[in-house]
Length: 110
Picture 1 (spheres, helix red, strand yellow):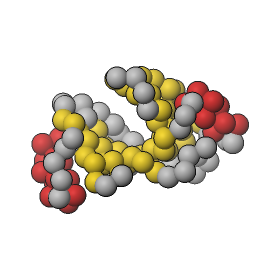
Picture 2 (picture 1 turned 120 degrees about the vertical axis):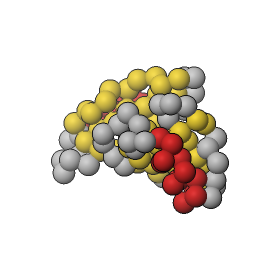
Picture 3 (picture 1 turned 45 degrees about the vertical axis):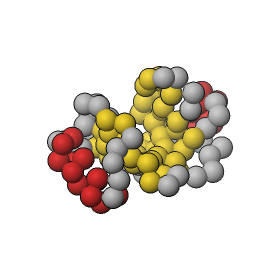
């Protein structure tokens, strides 16, 4: 299925304070900024800040077909936390929980 973790999303309470911290920590400026998500790119790694999440951090891997990948995770014993949904511009994400309660994500690029 996936080969590497491409994105890690951290839940944050105060997006402005988080931007100041992660901007300094990553020595980078956001490539995308909104009230609901801030994203950084450092090399091939993406770091996201999500003020609406209470779960995390969540590591995402890129998949070619999110629905079949989600089904494969269910068959491997995962519990769906968030079904596949479009989050803008043809980008789809989904989240599953493993048997120990850890949440991981799947991401399908447009």
